[in-house]
Amino acid sequence: MTVACLHIFLRRNPDSAAIYTPPDTFDYEENGRVIEGSWRAMSNENMTSLFPIRKIARKPTLKAKEIKEELAAYFLSRGRVEWQNDCA
Image (tube, rainbow, N blue to C red; front, side, top):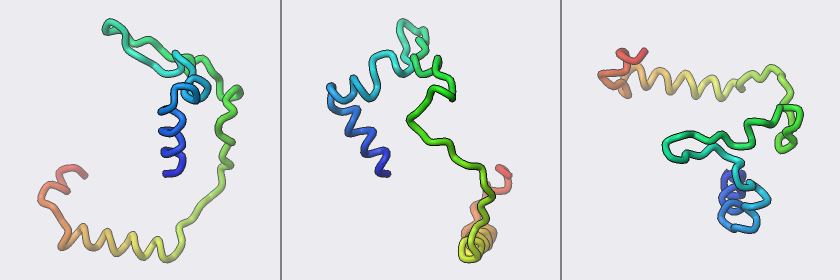
């Protein structure tokens, strides 16, 4: 949530928006044609805004598993909606 607030804050002010997201950064449409933004030309090696995330196994806690099972039981019984099996 904090990241979203910061993003909105930086985009709202014209001065910070010009630095944070210079013109033509994002894709836009002009006369029915999509003009690709400059971000598409960047390779993963050149992107410095996000740190690489290590790939490690993450197992849920016992409490998280219990909550998941409780929710599953509810949505398969009293919380069931008539169309849910059509979408499975």
